[in-house]
Image 1 (cartoon, rainbow, N blue to C red):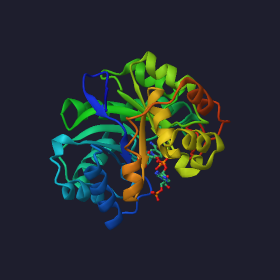
Image 2: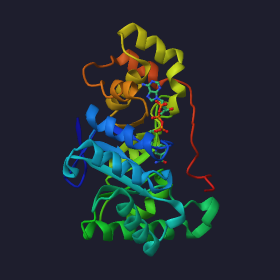
Image 3: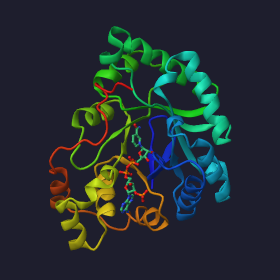
Image 4: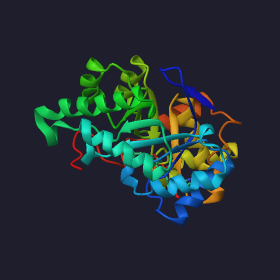
Length: 278
Ligand SMILES: NC(=O)c1ccc[n+]([C@@H]2O[C@H](COP(=O)([O-])OP(=O)(O)OC[C@H]3O[C@@H](n4cnc5c(N)ncnc54)[C@H](OP(=O)(O)O)[C@@H]3O)[C@@H](O)[C@H]2O)c1
């Protein structure tokens, strides 16, 4: 399935995640396997330390680069205009590609760490992404882990609007304020850790629905994400799971099951962008 971006481009859904996928053979094989299974959207980041293997996996798949959608992210130590430009250059080199489909600011500089300078730092980083778009090195630019309070300053001055915000999102973390703000600004929400890093798969609400409708817990959650209008990014290094997670377009959840999943009590597996210290 393709989703629309506000700049007129499209983005394939679901995307294939690579966080914690070990660099080397495991990563090369997971990416190759994912593309063979039918994923055309690969999500990585400089800080995952596996961009070279992601690139090798892409080449091993035999799929032409222009048929794939590749996302990477500038890490927190590289914020600011010049450093971001250099970070992107390294990412391109490591991936072995001459452009990215999407480049994201991985985490906002927050007030807890940077006080009054936080907004200015995020704007400087955004200016670098705008330049990369202008130079056609990056086709689309976006944000990750930006909540409305972090987004406001960037949106106020952006010459090129962010097309995506990638946030932790799953049953138990609906992120309503951020989702509403994104929609108002034409920003597509991407879900990271949609399966709660695997930990939501044992939730009784999820397993109950899965066994009743004859789907797996992972498929139920990914379907829920899609039906809420959000693009899931899902990671696995196992061929059977990689394939299972892609079979989510031949069924739908009814209103009652959607509501039950949305009602799972609040749980967050990753860091909060306001308090993250890395
Ligand atoms: N922007 C950010 O700050 C940020 C943060 C976190 C993640 N992300 C992105 O989002 C992607 C997804 O998030 P995530 O990797 O944290 O978590 P996730 O996709 O929610 O869960 C991955 C975990 O679930 C297991 N799993 C996957 N499919 C399964 C299935 N069908 N049945 C049973 N277990 C299954 C995987 O194990 P195996 O691999 O062993 O199969 C892995 O342990 C990341 O890979 C990354 O690309 C971005």
